[in-house]
Length: 210
Figure 1 (cartoon, rainbow, N blue to C red):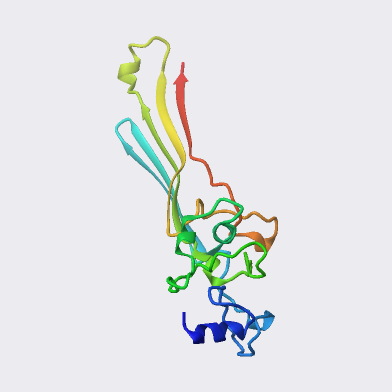
Figure 2 (cartoon, helix red, strand yellow; figure 1 turned 90 degrees about the horizontal axis):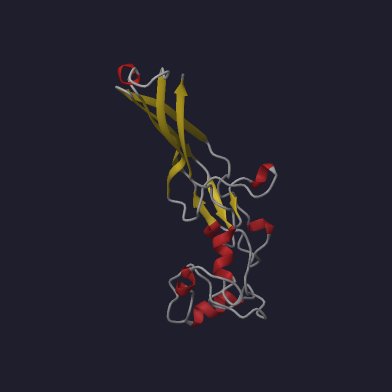
């Protein structure tokens, strides 16, 4: 840790290892004048594809959704990093700043009594690309042929099927799910604050016509 690092941090009333914010206007104060637009929580667009494929008695329905052009603010991950002394933490705290490990984005671990412990300013480090592809629904069914059903009295139609909702999610986002909004406001979309992921649901069905 060099003297330059100590002097530069002191200009903002901080110490080496504290979170660094960009001083946009160069006045050695971090305030509302240094705020910048860093993206949007609302997607620019989405594409949904629903197809049904049939072969003999089999029918396969696939519902795929692609959403792009938005960012997710992960407060969950941020709090996991800056609350390690009294709550469960993420493994990234092992990369926290120390005099021997200065090339990191994780701030130094501080005691709760420290004025810079657990800073919660919303910054670019909390933002993640939210683009994703989700297999929203997939269903497979089989309808028995009428010839086979003739041997079963009073049955004119018989089909079996299985359906899986929310089968898979493909994304670079490190959290559990890309579709969340914990606040009931227009600006609350894409804020991950310990949001619970969507479950995968499997259902089976049988259809009999007499």
